[in-house]
Length: 90
Image (cartoon, rainbow, N blue to C red; front, side, top):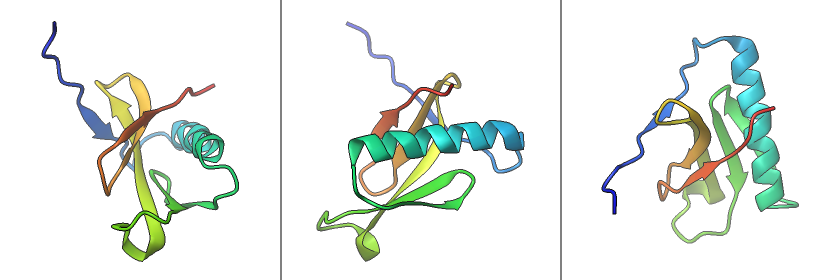
């Protein structure tokens, strides 16, 4: 049994614009798949918001930071509960 801990690192806004766009698009597609019919918006190139009815969500929105797990696995992290969702970038 391993005690390895995966480390989340948010993408930097000064990263390559093409890379940021690819990651943002893939993350939005994943959220649309997981929460069909809910509106997904981008607040900047590395942060997404989605409407939620979770009782502790501020303003009825969940925000997700786009980044990498262990500097290699594309993912996003929910700021409210720190849940990490991976996705594929094509």
